Length: 506
View 1 (tube, rainbow, N blue to C red):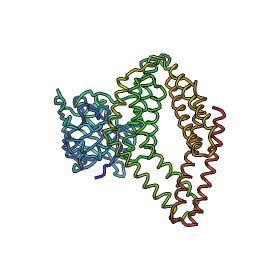
View 2 (view 1 turned 90 degrees about the vertical axis):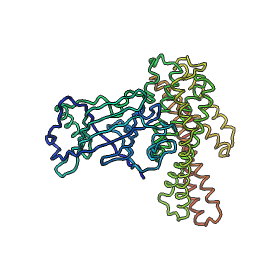
View 3 (view 1 turned 45 degrees about the vertical axis):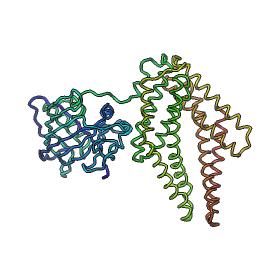
View 4 (view 1 turned 90 degrees about the horizontal axis):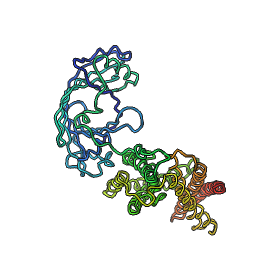
């Protein structure tokens, strides 16, 4: 069964003694109300022993009764806007093999980045008697729903206890935030007050450990007093958090998600390489190797995406025969699909979960290296100098190679990677509030971008040559491939000119 997701925007209230639902037709947008309709809801909530879901403001429940009974997964909204994302599947759904209960894989796939293969088990039961009142506009459309809930909970955690309370929930349906704001005033005037907990589960089980938050890293000292270790951990935490945020998006093939996860992985690896003596060598060696492995898997999928986009662009305005369309588009779509499957297989692996755990432990309890106590400013000065030196060394080596030879092209690729490393290193200056490296960062970015365009054009030319040299290629197809190759050659030449301009200023 396919999971359906919707954005849930609601207000939740605790009630003063004697509070009663007011006449909501006083609201300008509300023409009539219907109800209340009574529902009896029985829900069991699931989490790991360490409450990894609750710590990341995620709830997973199995609920019987009511118009929307089934499995529900609620997560924070992807943007800074209001509401939560709610995903639902039916009760009869295939189970997740990692779970001892029948938790559906359609939902657990979206939270495995937090669960990481750990066992999910019941942590609370919540029974609710719900009285539902619908608010309609003049055309009869439901604008919002007010739920009067009588709640009884039982925490299943060690030392957990039972609770009962009454609350109101006002959830938008077709209405807007203007209605929500107006209704809030009316409900508060009738004895409602802001809920003491964000959810029924939060109130049932009490305080939980909070998930990772990179904004808390590096706050112990001012920017001027920041140590090298604090800088590295702050940077590593930020990229770890970005990687984790992209994980569920990659699993549903969201646009640009593979690219963003790859960037997060590369940036985390770059931090370790740029500051090699700040953390203990054993930590850096293993963690950097695992990040490299993940970046490689993501890179294959991203490269396939880029090639497909490039092929589509090449065929714009071309009267290409079906054989070429099949080779450049249809076959490439299949390549994209197969590389994404490799990514998904890795994201379900114990090796990936161990990488995430190692990132967490490195951020939470770092093992200092010889340079840990340097000031962040001094460590960054040294890191930028090393990285810039590596770029210049690679550029000098290029001068001794035959232009357009395989070695020359490969060396350009090395320069591009080192320029990217330099740019990533200079980005750490943002945490220190300094513009000291802005010029070199801009130039490194220009150099990297130009060589990236050159690399993409050369890879495309190689692909076109392989297709054109295949057996059974007609003269007409070979002519079209030649024309496409000429366009890619021109693109490569343009990119090289841009690189030489950027190089002259570095």
